[in-house]
Length: 211
Ligand SMILES: CSCCC(=O)C(=O)COP(=O)(O)O
Ligand SMILES: [Zn+2]
Image 1 (cartoon, rainbow, N blue to C red):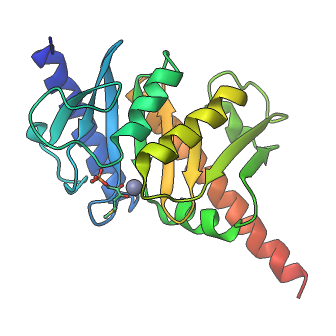
Image 2: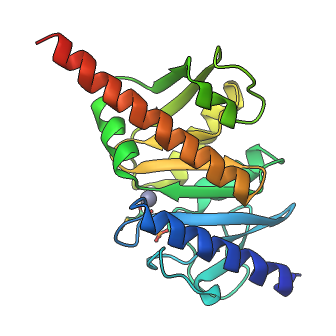
């Protein structure tokens, strides 16, 4: 049974987040998808193909954690990438997927690598459980795949064997980021984008040094 009042509150909060992310240029041209957990076995996710900066409460679908819709409409084509995370990490309450220029560019630039290591940044402390710059967070990278189910399984397999981190990248595609609730998910997403922008700039400078 869907709690319609809670569903509506979550839809309003996600629509506001979408507007903010669109203003930043992180979800251009209908890209991106957003979700929050409704309860232990369901989530609310954006409808597929909608403009993510102009969402209304009718642009959201309730799904079970096997990515099957339990309310009217067509959920995001990437719903399983959300629901697998809710299954893997029972503590998380929100997942945001964006196509910002920074994550898209860096995911293509570091082609042979399967992770980007972030270390020695004060901003790492934005992530839950990190209390010193002297920490290391590996953001994994996966090749893009139109078979979302296969990609979701690959991601889940990675997180079954590796320490948790709040995000992963899909090459030439974008970032998936999560948090205990929507606010912490937004904070993690801002931190990931900032830190990857720093990495991108550092690559640019070190490349210049070699010429
Ligand atoms: C135009 S972006 C291509 C699809 C995509 O990557 C995306 O994030 C949006 O897909 P959705 O089905 O959630 O609208
Ligand atoms: Zn996408």
